[in-house]
Each structure stands twice: as structure tokens, then as C-alpha cells.
Image (tube, rainbow, N blue to C red; front, side):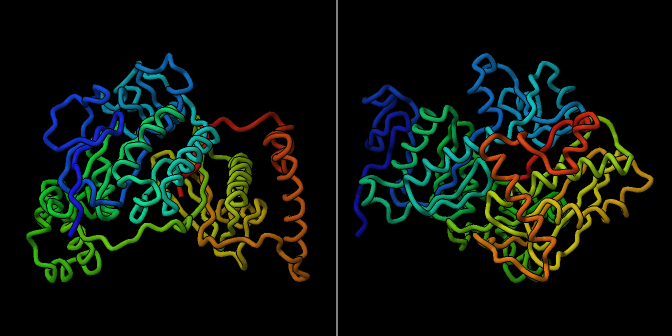
Length: 441
């Protein structure tokens, strides 16, 4: 028989309460009380940093606390993150900057500082890992946690441990996180979106279908704009609409996607939280301050992106078999081209030489506003790869780049540049851009 325990918790101090106890909390006076009949029986969580990049900027500059803050590129770039004040004006992530500034002309625009955000993300991750080894990163600012079996270690329920994590992150890192707690990943992620910022929401087994029913079909992960339009055209606008359709009918209409829609609409998600979730790709892109047409200038920028992507690959200790080039034209048309390498690599020069012909073929007769490169089909790299007599040039490049990486580790990223980048700097600095964006993997 399941142990009968108190079913309410003060999020401000962690005090346990009987479910019917009135607010505020007798221990601390706090009013953030969470009550749920299954609170002590759930163990899968989704932790999401609130407006992460903007929150870090506000943390580091208290004068921005009440200001609308947008982190992103220049006038021609896009919004990377908008704080909650800016969101009240209708500013959203991925919105073109000119539209964001039209909606919120008083916004403070800050160029992204990805190394700073990555450091803060690592700090958050370390705190998560003090609760459980089963932490599955989704991106720099969110992760799934499985706390089943940790009650004996922490002498508290998963809900209590997560509430403590929320307080610790705010105290030690200076940002807030929103937490969703449930019995599987889909429902935990859904719950974490219910109460932002600094929220804590729960979806239990008994209520899952009822809670999901009024949500739009787009609330199901993987249902993008195209699929949502198709479902809407078929009369399926809410998750409740999906719940009312027989499983066999959904499979007949939508194939494997129909099976997935049927399961998730009823709150069924059999994916496990895995600490070994693999990075799918490493990509870097940049948006230009003014459209570029010249192949030489595009090549120079692409080289710099290859250098940065290579650094990230080496830091993650992975190699990739596929190199992809991404271009966006002045009229927002996106072109992607890729090539498979004869063997996996993480070298900047290998990436550049693979992408260079793709650029020459596709950057013709058009002006471009964005360029990006990525490595994909990743696998772990060898710690000390053995020299290969049949690939002497690549081994030479690996040795050269390794020496440069070591100098950068000791003296900073600007201490030394690879040949093409050095030549570009001698000619007069970097091409005008609205800032580079490291894409989440």
C-alpha cells in the first residue's frame, strides 16, 4: 500500500503542509503553495530557464531589471530571446528585429554573448546533477530529469528536491527556472509551459487526458506549422479532437505520425530520460548587416564560421560525416546543401573545403542575408587518433589546428588565427554582420 504523505508544499521555503492548510505559509509567510493529490508520486521533470539569455543580461546589469530587453542581432537580424516585459508587447523569439522594434521601440537590444550563456548553462546543469545522474539536456537552457529512486539519497520527495533546486538556481546563479513535474517527458514539458516565469506545475496520471484536451494540436512536440494546418483542415484543432478519433483511423490517415498523435494525445510517452542523449549536429550561422553578393566576402565569413564550428566540435569531442551549407536570400528564401565526407572530421579546413564548392554553385546571381555551416551525423572522436599514412594532409591539418587550439586555450580566442582568417584581419577586419548565432543542437 502506498505511503500516505502530505500533499502540499511551500515553494518559497520547502515546508511541507497538509493539503487544507491556508496560505500564507506558516513557516515563511510565502504564498507560492503547490497542491496536488499525486505530488509525491511523480518523478519525471522538465526544467526550463526563463528567457535565459535576457535573464543573464538582466542579472549582470541591474539597471535592466524593469526594462524590455531583446537579445539578438542588429536591425536585420532576428530575436534570439525576449524578456517577459518585451513579450507583453508581442515580441517573440525568431521574430525579425525590425518587427520587434516596431512593436517595442523602447526595447534595449543586446548582442548575444554565447560564451557567457554557455557558462551559466553549465552552472545550471551542475546543480541539476546534484539531484540525479539522469539529466537529459535538451538545449543550453533546459533539460529533463528522472528522480525516481532518489528519495533515499535526498531524504525527500522528487517534488521537494526540485523546489529546492529552483530556489538554489535563483540564489546562486541569479535567474529563475520553471519546472514541470509528471510521469513522462511529454507531460513534464507540457506542464513546465503552464506557469512562467518561476513556475512549478504538475500533471498527474489521473488528470492527464483532461488537462491535455483543451490544448491546441500544436502543443504536441513535433507538430509544426505544416502538420498543424493539415490537422486543422481535417477538423482536428485541439488535442481533445485527437482523443476522440480511433487510433486505427489516425494511423490510416497519417501513418506513423498518426500512431504518435494517438499516444501523445492520451498522455502516453514511453521515451526514457537518458543522460547519454546524443548531439545531432553542431551549427553556426550569422546574419549580415547588409545583403552580400560577392563570393570572396562570403567565403571569408564562411571560413570564420567553419573555425567556430570546429572549435565547438573539438570541445564536445565529436566528429561529423556530413557538412551542410545554409544560405538565406534577401527575400528570405532558404537554401541548404550538404556533402558527405569520405571520413568523419571536426577540422575547420576540412569543413571549409567541403562547403566551398557548395557555396560557389549556389551563391550565384543572388544577394544573401545569412550564411551558416554545420557538421552532422556525429560520433565520438578518438582521444589520440593514430596518424594515417593515406591521409597525410589531413593529419598535418589536425596537428596545426591542435597547436592553435592549445594557444587559444592559454591566451584567449584572439591570440592566434588560422591563415585565411589572419589574412582577412590584415585586409581590414571582419565583414559587417549582425552577430553570429550558435544554433542549439
